[in-house]
Image (cartoon, rainbow, N blue to C red; front, side, top):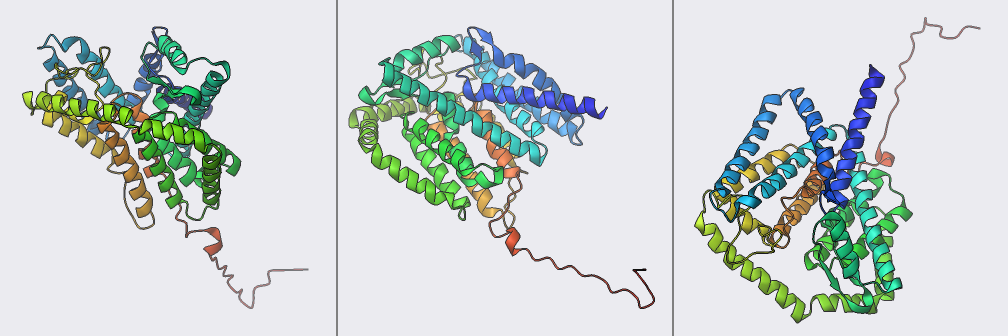
Length: 429
């Protein structure tokens, strides 16, 4: 029985790992029209339902799930009253459900300390592999002269989604993948939790370099700032890790060696022509979404709805860069407040701020706020892939953290051997 249960648990973890890799690396759930995420999602949902049924608070867990489905169903039905939104309602409803379902999957599959560490390593290596793929594509583009936009168009054709790209002349081109949204969190992990996860120095340096290059070529100002923030918070946690000095030395050396390229890249991104256009487009969204919100402030216009006078795109018109304001217009104050309550309940027991962990949990809270703040710049808060970001912060908050002062050298153990009575003869010849 033990062997059977062990093999069953192992197969479930493998399936869960495959799902996390799919969420992190794949630009969409389909490959040549086949939805591979659904193929893995359905058995995982069954396993998680079985696990929840065995918990002591099973009724409360199922009540939260039923409440989520109820609020999503209400917001979806509301969209059916408007012919402009009805075709998109189910699409966004699926995004919301899979986001919270993914968070639940992470909680169930990381019940033990070993599973938490294993999950964090899985996300770290998966994002690092995605960054490596990006570097390989960029090198291939520069070596062969193939435009990055052509490579991106080919990837978009395979996964049935339009990815963002831009040619940058002699320094390559913009290449942004879904896994790039995890770059700040993963940068924090490799720097701040390197010793906790048993990652060697050379591997950590290689990963930091990959993540840095990947962040630069996202050509996103928010990701740049967030990645720097993640690195700084990681250094704050690992104050006594001598690798921090090596990271700083490597960053300085790489900056000096590639200064002309980096200078061109950063100057181009912050040029008035690009920055002003991007900022003005976001301002137009805010103006239109404010009117959209006031059309139905309490209960929203429904999932899949969008401002008719300002579409973000033809393919996914409800996904705006200013996603938080769009969500208020879609679900209203009532629906949005319910989603926030679910998120607070998810993290309620993970953050404790006890002595010895206050700094650690405060840093994780900053990472969480930073990710949610991305909702003012990117439409990635309520998509299936975002469950990995929420789940990573949740798992790291639940990990037992060793404070820097509690080292083995500082521990003093006194062994007291009781004296034997005089009449006792412990040794005989």
